[in-house]
Image (cartoon, rainbow, N blue to C red; front, side, top):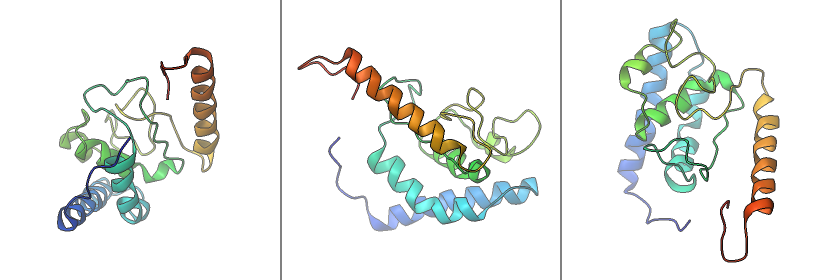
Length: 154
């Protein structure tokens, strides 16, 4: 995927700050959670989601998407902020309900519960094994279904 021109640095700073503010506000409102990791990882998350990951908020189940696995699930406000800001069906009201009973933004990301979350993570390091499994599955699918001049999986 060719990279587009770099965005205006001021706009990038504003986007990173939006991730930080959403994260710290949600954790503060819940009176529970971990604001440090989402605030510190905001620049990395912003660059990954806007410059490198292939994803489609209008079609979150697109089979050829890249997967983002947050192994440190306690930093879940990072992924929730990024999902919200990049156009996934995760409205601000759900961000406000972070870590509340029956919200779509639990303290640790849960697959099948929040659109855009690729796997449930909790124990530190669990996401590493999940990611390896996803990568191996993708490689197997490419080997099985791709043909010269016709890449179904890339």
